[in-house]
Image (tube, rainbow, N blue to C red):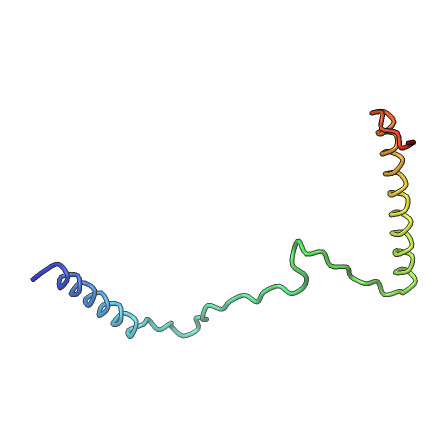
Amino acid sequence: MNAYSLDGLVVIALLIICSCAYLKRITLPKGVKQKAKKPKPTGPKRGHNLYIAPRKQQLMQQDKVAAEVTKIINDKNEEMVKGQADNAVGRNKTS
């Protein structure tokens, strides 16, 4: 008998034991409920940015206008800060 046949016998023995245990499953007593998977929560996933539209169209328009104004102000501020930084370093655009 070599090592391979011994390993084969061990594997077959384990398969027989596991299959017998599977076929002879324990039945639950009366009145006991089966385990049930919980339903997954619905709605947007955490971390995913979703814009929920407002009910009133006028509010949506106001939000768009406010966002556009904020963007313009931020762009102007950025240009002003860049200009001040360029002047402080000595990079003037007059050439």
